[in-house]
Amino acid sequence: MIWSDKKILAAIERGEIVITPFDRANLGTNSYDVHLGKYIARYKDHILDARAHNEIIHDEIPEEGFLLHPNTLYLGVTLEYTETHSSVPFLEGKSSVGRLGIDIHATAGKGDVGFCNHWTLEISCTHPVRVYAGMPIGQLIYFGVEGDIENYYNKKTNAKYNKVQVRPMESMMWKNSF
Image 1 (cartoon, rainbow, N blue to C red):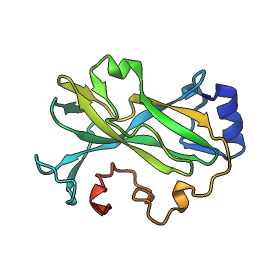
Image 2 (spheres, rainbow, N blue to C red; image 1 turned 120 degrees about the vertical axis):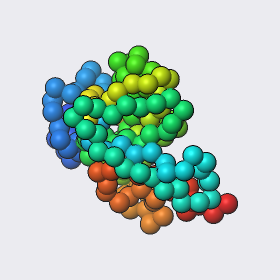
Image 3 (cartoon, rainbow, N blue to C red; image 1 turned 120 degrees about the horizontal axis):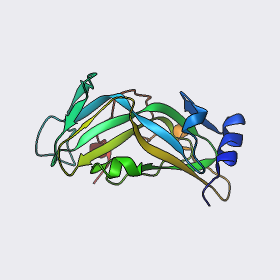
């Protein structure tokens, strides 16, 4: 079940959800709006290899914005650092962003209980569009978890995205055995 604004606020007050910076104005009826951070990245090579460490090039989004082009995967990052200790966070794009033809995640819209970091965004667009640091980009919704948790994400020794970063992180698929 999706949590209401009051339930999200109560979880924040108990420290079960952390959002930094937090602004009450970004709390919706059943979600919290997050914003595009100042860093964006793209892969150095055009051809990616799932078994290789694919390097990325970071850019800082200038005041005049950053132009996204179709057929390119960009990695963005949320301005907000979040922690979730008792619920499952889902990140969805804002409808206003979708109406500009921007997708903010290809497959990774769900976080794990214990995720403590900025969210890396998998950004693509249908036609050229300029984006800006600080613009609303998505919304976090929270679902309750039934049952006890044995393995929180931030305590997993094999978790690939536990190191806190303010810049987008590239795929760590190459660390898997296959």
